[in-house]
Amino acid sequence: MSEALVVATDLATSARAVGICRDFDGWYATVGVHPHDCGGFAAATVNALRDLTRDANVRAIGETGLDFYREHQPPALQEQAFRAHCRLAAELDLPVVVHQRESLDAVERVLGEALGSAGGVMHSFTGPPETVQRFVDLGLHISFSGIVTFKKADDVRAAAAEVPADRLLIETDAPYLAPTPMRGRRNEPAYLPHTAAVVAAVRNVSVSSLCATTTHNARELFRCAPLP
Ligand SMILES: [Zn+2]
Image 1 (cartoon, rainbow, N blue to C red):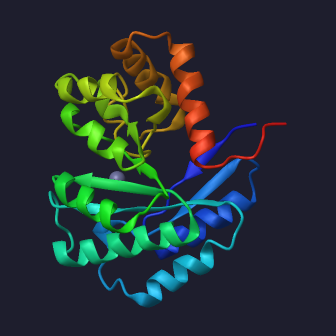
Image 2: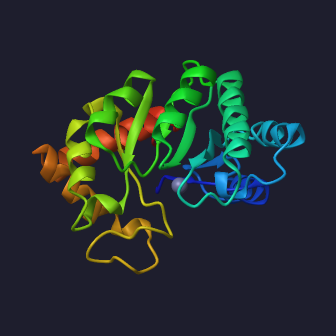
Image 3: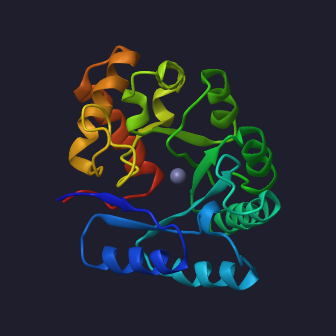
């Protein structure tokens, strides 16, 4: 049996993720509105997300967060939407899936103010390494995508070495961020071993040990059903 987290980026994909997960045992959905797509975000959006969480396969709120690099939406609106996602996660005791780009300080502030003890994941973390502990202290897991395999990503590898073992995750971020040597292709879960190999190397553990750790952490964070 395969297990997967199907990550949504707006209301339509949230509903779609829930629908997809009905068809596959061990697949779990997130519901949320990505900071790129939060134009028009309002109380009604939060209510629609809350309604979707009634489905038992919904195990996280997101993607949410702040992206001050692309700034597809005004920062104030992004922060309003991110805060609402964090409050919803706290209310429902579901983890958040956090997107951040050039926004670490603001993300840390909003998480500290609104998330409570719900926890979550800093997805596709890109460092710098000295910031890892700040998010660990807020109860977050730290997840690494294919970026950790990129030639110039020494800072990201240094961050991957810093994360406490019980907070470490790896991810695809598919269809984006395919790891070296697949970089530039459409990413897919089959490429994840390339990411695992690099993270294992920088942490000086075997690939099988790394995978046991990250699988355990993911299954616990997203409260996956016991395996048959
Ligand atoms: Zn993202």
